[in-house]
Image (tube, one colour):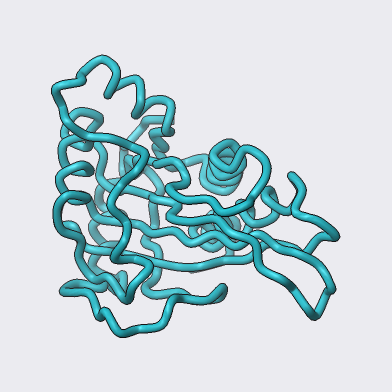
Length: 209
């Protein structure tokens, strides 16, 4: 899973081609809705990606982190995923590192368009990346329930972001929604996680050139 051969060249091209949202936060923008997408996820094959736990969850049942990890592995087998359990092991062994994987300062993402992150989030990511050789941070920001009136059911929405750890640039931000269900069950969570992984990694199965 950790082979990086050939990945750094594709990564460099992907970063240059991606719509990076560099700059500032526009604080008067309305909260993003499901279907929002800013930027184009770069080709992550061979890239070392730190995967963080879902930072905030509102009334969503099930194991969100496990479903997200399953979706990422399913759609991106050639990506060097560094999962939350691995990141936490590093932190447990190095408490002086002063980083964390839960309770990150993601407030700006709920306020407006974020083009480049600053401290304390940037510092948390950089310190951890320096130990695990991470190039990109994938942060599932928030999970919540939304009513799907067209299908008379409830769906799980997930917002997430990809961040270039070295520069702090936001490479991609998006909000996806899974299938509507009669109630928010494990299937609803799995559906949202699968849509999120497919959005990021569709090129793995021919979804993007």
